[in-house]
Length: 387
Image 1 (spheres, rainbow, N blue to C red):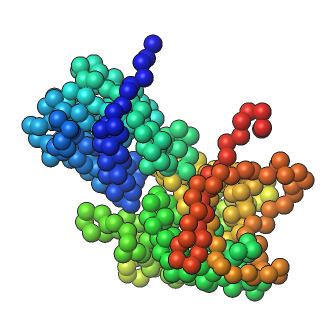
Image 2 (cartoon, rainbow, N blue to C red; image 1 turned 180 degrees about the vertical axis):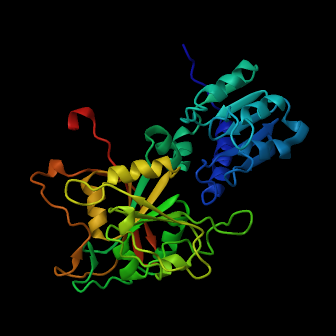
Image 3 (cartoon, helix red, strand yellow; image 1 turned 60 degrees about the vertical axis):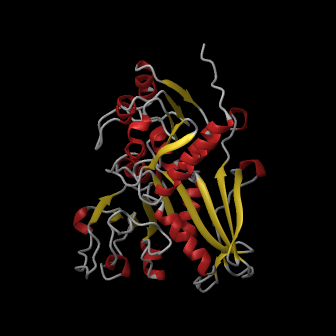
């Protein structure tokens, strides 16, 4: 029988510091998780660190470097189970053992099958006291994409929409720029920067001259000073893009999804500098209504190490994700204006005969962003009796 650990006030404070540190890597660690570590000896912090960039040292390594010899006999607070396998860096569990830690407090177990339970087991086998579960909910919130991908092999899907107060996304003539203000558009940049990929359509790219990249001074840069650009995934069923669009003049990789065979794909015009590093193409199947198979799309992106997907397009693609219940998180910006009955609706879904058929959401956050309202919600997981 496992006895639940009893955590002190100091334990909570030091783990909260580790969580705050982990959040500093939110724009740069993908596809790795955000992790923070604090090393404490005699109630004094002697070392701390966070994972900064995929391929670089993990949080524990930075904290151990700062602590030096003071790590011996100390306690380490880590937001995610220390890794126990060789990847691009050596196992952090081995580094903690070698440093002579007396205790390790872990916020949550890593669902990665290469790690899950083995990191904790290795520490305990070395005689180190390990306590798991402190501020687990807060630690979970650091890495929704990484954790979801490890548990389901599919990306965590965030759908973004901007609408008027009466739920309209554009006037009847298609005009939609700009419903929301500068502050809301800057906020979108931060969401994009936290994503592994941004999904949109050729129609949005052509209609809005959309670049779909991260271009914000508010986003923390990589160690070399560059912004990590998410993969831009564009659904271009009829090969409408030519290569002349602004999308292709920005840095960052692009994945074009087509429906037809390769011999039908349009030859793209050579991109001008600064060009995308790589433009890739893939053929996707269609579903029973002749649209891209979104389940196949998500499986394909999951196989490409895409943990989190930011969907930013028009109401048709939003409706397709909504109807198939493929949205994990909903991010809605509402502008303080009314567009009227003739304007285009946010979603074009119908067919519901009873309220019980409509998916339920759980509001997570409501706040003002400049003059606009931002609402975020998670899909409510139905109990077995409700399904």
